[in-house]
Length: 209
Image 1: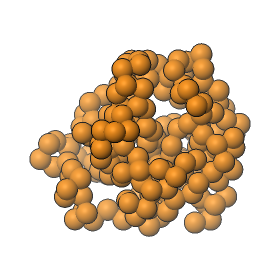
Image 2 (image 1 turned 180 degrees about the vertical axis):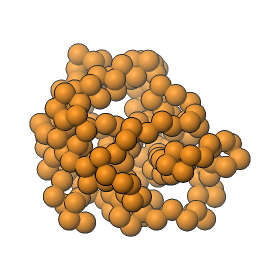
Image 3 (image 1 turned 60 degrees about the vertical axis):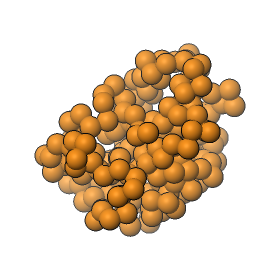
Image 4 (image 1 turned 90 degrees about the vertical axis):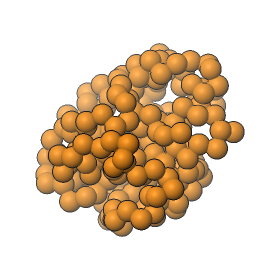
């Protein structure tokens, strides 16, 4: 039960947008609801329900200007529950990227990963498990190195602990305990934010870390 990727199969080649500065290996793994846009108890079910958090675009632009790649890691169980489909989610993510770029031209989302699985599925790709973070690191590293991942080279959950990826300078930002659980399981620094303030409130903590 692997992570899913925005408008692509998980292991398709990833064409990364250019960073304003050279990349040194740092990734900002960001939750979506409560970090970039306002979360809702009844979920964000349509583009018309998206409300962006103040300063999210500027914060993401600032992170990329500091050399971070941006990987969205979001649980989206309504798909697994059968409430709506992958295309509905894709349209929501297209819209979010558009609004971020309107605020800051550097606010590119390098990779959007999501878990469509229900909470009772036990999926490794659902936070607080670290599957989306594991996939994000491998996809970004491969793209930066010009390598192609396939089923043999992609490291699944059982083998991932043996990888050599260094996460000490990266960060996971989320508004819920499951985000911090995923960060802890992956060995990356976790920063929990107020869901009404989002990533903009964490920018100083991220950059000083």
